[in-house]
Length: 193
Ligand SMILES: CC(C)(COP(=O)(O)OP(=O)(O)OC[C@H]1O[C@@H](n2cnc3c(N)ncnc32)[C@H](O)[C@@H]1OP(=O)(O)O)[C@@H](O)C(=O)NCCC(=O)NCCS
Image (tube, rainbow, N blue to C red; front, side, top):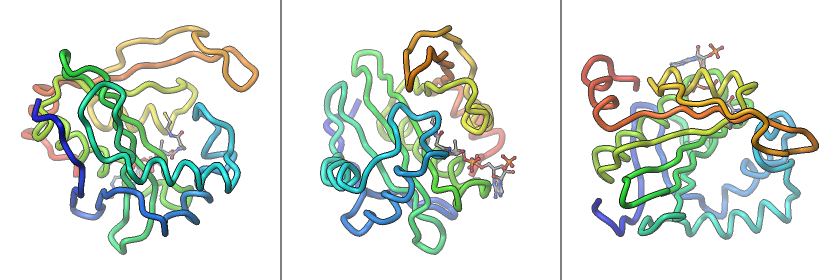
C-alpha cells in the first residue's frame, strides 16, 4: 500500500469529497444532533460543544499511515453545499482492509448522494490505496444503510446476534463487504456513479 497517504479531495459527477472545515460547524451540528440521524449510530445526538470538539479533531484527520487512522470527508453536493460525511478507517495494513461508513443530512437523503460518494471513496480505496477489502458494519434494522451496501454491490457476510449493548438494549450487527476484484468487475460492468 502507498502509505503514508494524505487525503485532499475527490471529485465525482455531482459530489465532491474533501476534509471538514471550520465553516462546516452548523450543518455538522444539525446532522449530529438529529435524533433520527443518530438512531442507528454508535453515539447519542451530540451537543454543540461536542460537535465543536469533534470538528476540531476530525478536520485534521487526513493522514492514513497505520491501523486506526481514519478520514472523515465531507460530501458536498453539486452546489457545494454540505450533504453529509463519509468515514474510512484503516483496519489493517498487512491485510489491506478498511471500514467505511456514511451519514447524510435528512434533506440530502433520497438523492443518491451517499451512493455516489461511497462509490468515489471505494474507487479511491481500491485504485489509489490498493486495499483488498472494504467492509461496513451496521444495525440490521437500518434498512437505508443495508440498501446502500447492496446498491454498492457489497456482500452480506455476517449477522452477529446481540453482540453490543447499545443505547439501553442488546443490538445485532450486520456486516457487508466487497473485495478489490469484485469492485473492479462491478465498475467495468456498470459504473454506479
Ligand atoms: C444510510 C443513508 C446514508 C442512506 O442515504 P440514502 O440517501 O438513502 O442513500 P443513497 O445515496 O443510496 O440514495 C438512495 C435513494 O436516493 C434515490 N435517488 C434519487 N435520485 C437518485 C440518483 N440520481 N441516483 C441514485 N439514487 C437516487 C433512490 O431511489 C433511493 O431512494 P429510496 O431509498 O427511496 O429508494 C441515510 O439513510 C442516513 O444518513 N441515515 C442516518 C445515518 C445512518 O444511519 N448512517 C449509517 C450508519 S451504519
